Image (cartoon, rainbow, N blue to C red; front, side, top):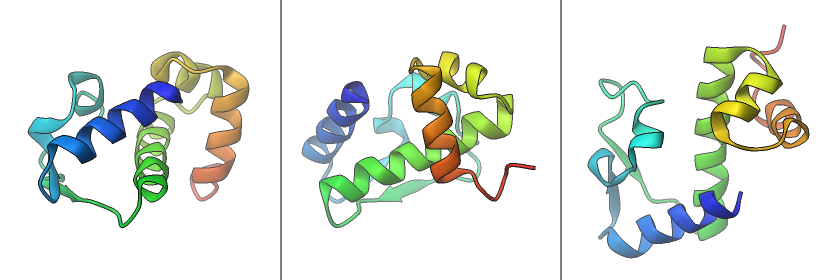
Length: 95
């Protein structure tokens, strides 16, 4: 999660008010459907920005892989952390 926090902090610092898709690293844009995302408005606080980014990454990865083990591998986090985040952000996607 520290890598995610560092990424969000860097994006907030380098952007004026809107983070453009082009500002995101390849590891994130590879997981986005770019035709649906044109820009991401900055949340009002750093914590909200981190939370929203976690939500987007976890939901997209879970929709693709449907397994906490595969989500963990995809996002380079532990399976325990992946399971916790899936429960937190993907309740509506879990069958």
